Amino acid sequence: MFVSSPDYTTNLALNWTGSITSLSKLHQQLIVGMQIHKDGFESVEGDQTITLEISVEGGYMDSGQLIWYPLSTNVRQTQNIKCPAKKNKCDSIIIAYEPYLTYSAYKYHVHIIVDGPAYIIGNTTFWFSYINDAFTMFELWFRFFFLVCSFVVFTIFIIKLRSYQWRDWSLEQKWVALLIFGTFAYNNPFFPLTIILPGWFPVFLDITFFASFVVLLLFFWLVIFDGIRQEDARRSFIKFYLPKIIFLGLLWLFVIVAFTLFSIYENEDRSTVVKIQGYITFFEVSMTVVLVGYSIWLGYIIIRACFMMSTMVIYLIINYSTPINIGFKET
Image (cartoon, rainbow, N blue to C red; front, side, top):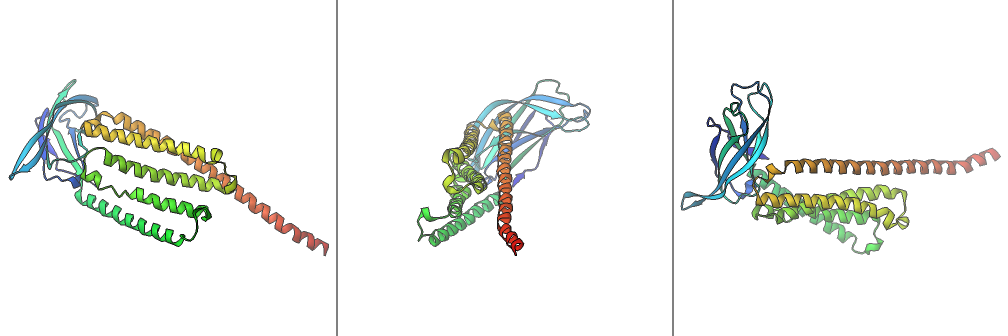
């Protein structure tokens, strides 16, 4: 999916200027990274704190000439770089991020300020990474194809059941209709807007549709397996549905708010992806905890449902076999 440009290695370790051209909106985003070499100091290890001053220019073609326009000047950021021992390179880091490509070319001026001994810095490798435009076209056609498939299947399903009122549908038929309709959101008919239009709102729509379908699917599994133990008429909204709605509703809200705030920040500040690494880690851990909790809950109700079904089978076997045994003894 991501394509990396050829590495740019400079022996002027504390200053670098590089540019990339021939970009289009189909490349979606641009990432700039760097990797410090420890030429002759492979035995040095530990974290190295550096401060970067980054200036960014955007370029566009005008009358056959590439015109550069300043986007940001001398923006400072501080990063900790891990430098393993017995290796001649430190770990790679991301120093800039363009979430939306407004220009066809970008130029970066980087000045490295080392907060500590600078003697370990040798050559420095810089690299660009962006999404392959062929992959973007594949993604657009992929979503469009399955969006059409969802529409065709949903239309056929509704036509087949048009002679029945909604209240006469079985529980499974109602859920199938909702899930097929949810695939419209999953395939997001507005996805091209995230490529064409800048800003956070198209991304917000994509996240909302995706999260809504996933939460609907998680809610479906909980209701179906937990409903094995109870008839439809005995299901209380407060005891049966409300706990599931609250749990999955909080999950849905958490995902929407987190990704929307991140989209807003990254559009306002190109170094957002660098500054909020800690928050991204917190989000990943939180999502893991929530999904583990959901898995435990789902596993619990599946085990209870299986236990109940096995109990019912034993009960039926005993009830149906008892009259036969009694009749056999009497003869």
